[in-house]
Length: 133
Image (tube, rainbow, N blue to C red):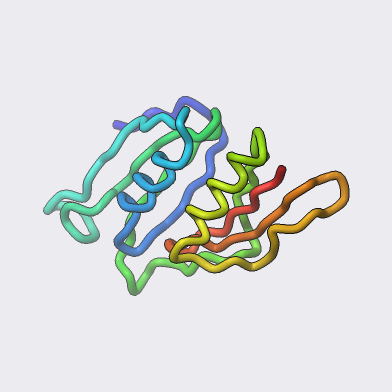
């Protein structure tokens, strides 16, 4: 049984590609940690073999992902996004290129206020990210 390590986490519901999204996010942050994966079984609701839940951490922030049947899965919206304060320009540029590939750049990169570079990207899975340097 899943026992959360943190009391507040970001929860993302996908419609079939939760494991692919989780693997992509883990590959983008060198210090990322995969915590657990539980798959949908034959007795469970949903498509057998898809993620019932997957948990991971990016820079200490806890995430949980799951797959839901396509007809019930809600669409992601840019009204909520994941903000990443990049450690340097090289990290910003790398994340921008990777998340923009197959995704949609909504803004930037551009300088805004005290930030040298800001961008807003909806990735290839439909999740919106903001990268700031």
